[in-house]
Length: 358
Ligand code: SF4
View 1 (cartoon, rainbow, N blue to C red):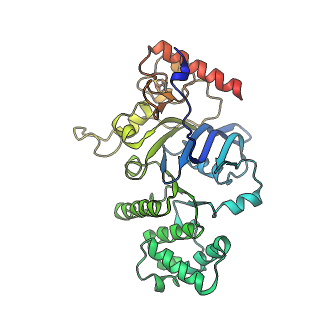
View 2 (view 1 turned 90 degrees about the vertical axis):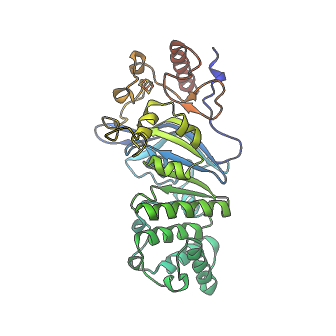
View 3 (view 1 turned 45 degrees about the vertical axis):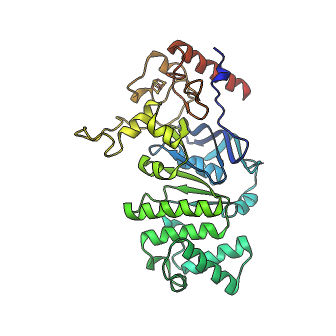
């Protein structure tokens, strides 16, 4: 059975961001932590790509690698990150600074990390407008007000003069999104932007991102541990576990037909997903620290479907069956339309091929 029928490739021609085989590691005295270990995905204009997984799965390190924000003792060891065809991994800090907050902007979980408490919200937006759109004076004030209006802040012409502590949590996150938009980005990376907010405000922020995306044809990378949020916002989902993408599929397909045992576990642990259950299901155990090369399945100690080969063969993302163009799973049970021993062999061969390419 030729493994080429079951492509591992998920990149498309019109991607604005293309991440291929990204390897980011942290070097401590004791060990090397492979926080991103061969991560590949892409994002098109106007598309929201979700990255989901438990904490420690490598989601935020993936985002920080793209933004050039991996701090020592971490560094990118290999792979490629291309934005509009341009390689980012070879950029200097100075070149990266121009890109950050310009073509690519980021919204973090805690808006207070992005807002300076001693400047008014309006001044902080105007600073971004000056840096990235060369606007100043009344022109910048007008634009700051219209950005606050665009993110749904009422009475924007008065609130533009207020300080972050005068805003509620939800309003602050809206202000941070306005600041990000002031840079007129083409790609917006959102790292758990709604986690600290209550559900009503969370829903409003998700709706806002949706509207802004439509208006501006924004590409959005949305990181969360919350499958419910992913269902709301994403067009396509990448599920991460211990530094690797273990499943990737369009959102409806992923929720209707999850294949990887980890994704199945995540979906079962959504409150209300099984009305007959008396207790909420959880995945027993913790995400392991990926501190050695993956020569086996890192999910095996927690996997209810593990079998002998799972400790010996490293599964790579392969199409879940011959007809699945956009659905891959890094699990030895797939492709599902060949025998289990053939599937294991395909993973072994695909792993050897990718090692030879390095
Ligand atoms: S490869 Fe084995 S251990 Fe890993 S997810 Fe698949 S069945 Fe479970």
